[in-house]
Length: 82
Image (cartoon, rainbow, N blue to C red):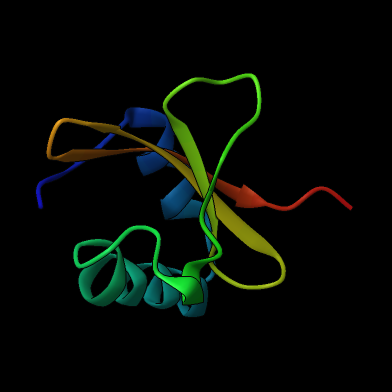
């Protein structure tokens, strides 16, 4: 499944520690492409934002994406609010 990156996602991704970038890469390569609702990702729709999903990288980081036909558009990656 094709993946597109927004400029915001790219900027945020570059700021992340390397271990978090590795977790994101693993999720994208092995899980997201196979099934974005994979239980390990804890993926869910964001309330009030039609077509936007969130999934957790770990207990501290999450990313948001939308799905347009067969393409995933990665929108943002950030820490979870406290």
